[in-house]
Length: 172
Image 1 (spheres, rainbow, N blue to C red):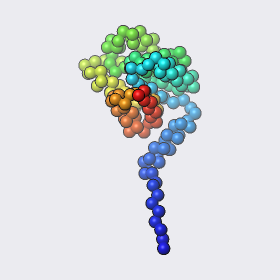
Image 2 (cartoon, rainbow, N blue to C red; image 1 turned 90 degrees about the horizontal axis):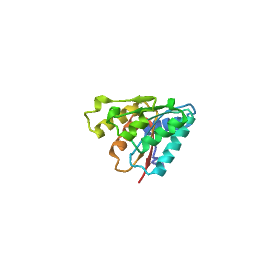
Image 3 (cartoon, rainbow, N blue to C red; image 1 turned 90 degrees about the vertical axis):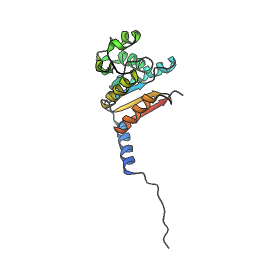
Image 4 (cartoon, rainbow, N blue to C red; image 1 turned 120 degrees about the horizontal axis):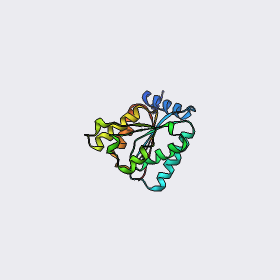
């Protein structure tokens, strides 16, 4: 009498995904890491994000972010303190469209990419395009979001679809 045992074996796609994640985690050489997140971040969280970006750059990683206040500004501060040459900031629109307090910080960034062709778009539309451009240039995405941060959550899904390692932190 034979007995059938139903094993829950992950699909081949999931095994490939796990293998990619393990390889990315074990990689000791420098990586291109994108860090994106909400503008509405408590100052204590901003300090943690700044320290993390500082440490990632000191370890030789290249960081990419956008130019908004909050998370992205903290990433810029940390990376600039460690090594400004290892930071690339991609703006959703032109530098002129950024708030004054952001412009002061952004003018010090060596590798700054503007997208004036998106000036006619809403900030949400331009940010979506910008985030996708950032993801295509990175190997890993670290994202800080709220559960209702639709643009950021869409960016995480986009990065996963591109088979990037995605680490998502929720503030709420």
